[in-house]
Length: 147
Image (cartoon, rainbow, N blue to C red; front, side):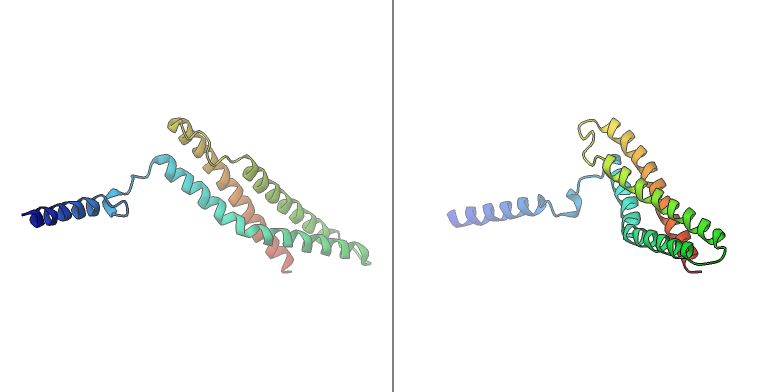
């Protein structure tokens, strides 16, 4: 009889443990709106950030070409102006990314869900602008420096 009680207890315990397993698909906490927004913000950052090293390399290449053209005889003002504009666009993108990253607060307003949602909506808009500036400036610089 005691053996039967132990077996029944073991079955009940194993069933309870299996049903309450946090790794179970059914027990995943629902993703909140703020979690989704945060992920979108981080995804926007993750698209632009890998381009930053290339952006800085393009800045150096453009400056080096401008400096070389200034030393050469002849009229290179059009090319120099194009390179100067390219450097300014790259500089703006570099600063925009750094300013956004310094200002972004990952944990901001954790205890105030409505305010956190508003904050993350603004950050999503901002990071998308930064991402667009970074990607477009790198693309333009690639085309200018390829010539």
